[in-house]
Length: 153
Image 1 (cartoon, rainbow, N blue to C red):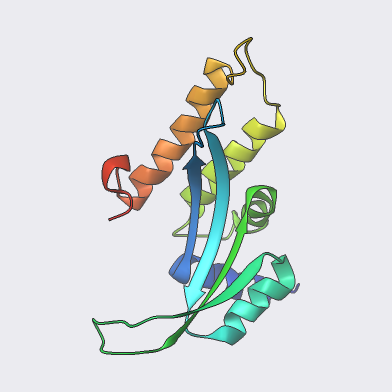
Image 2: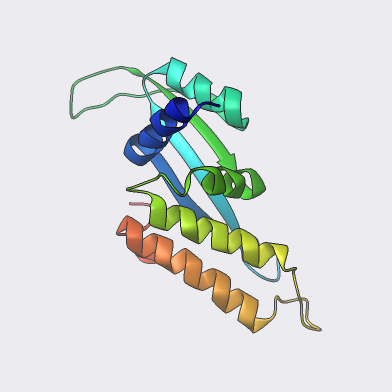
C-alpha cells in the first residue's frame, strides 16, 4: 500500500471510524472477555470495499432511515476484531489524529492478551490482568464520552 492511500484511509478512520474495546461476560465465562474492535460505517460502498480488500474482516449492508435528514440512504459497515483489529491499529497509530488514543489502548490490550491468560485456581483471570484490561476498557468509554450505565443509549 502506498503512503498516499495509507494517509487517505487513516483520514477515513479518523472521521468515520470507531476504534474501541468491547467487554463481554457470558454466564458460562468465569471472567469477562475484552475484544479489540475497529469499524467504519458509511453510505459509500466503494470505501468500505477498500477496507475489506486490504484488511479482511466483515462487510455488511444495512438499510437505515435517518430521520434527522429525512433520508433513506443505504448504509455499509466494515468491521474487524481482536488480533486483526490490533494489527490494524499498529499499522495506523502513527498517522491517526482523532483516534490515536483509542488505537494505543487497543494495542495495549492486545499486548496484555499476548502475555497470556494467567488464571487462579478458580479459573478467574488473575486480578492484575483483570484490572489492567478493565482500565483500558474504562479509558475507551471515557474517550467516547459514555459511562457503562448509559453505553447503549
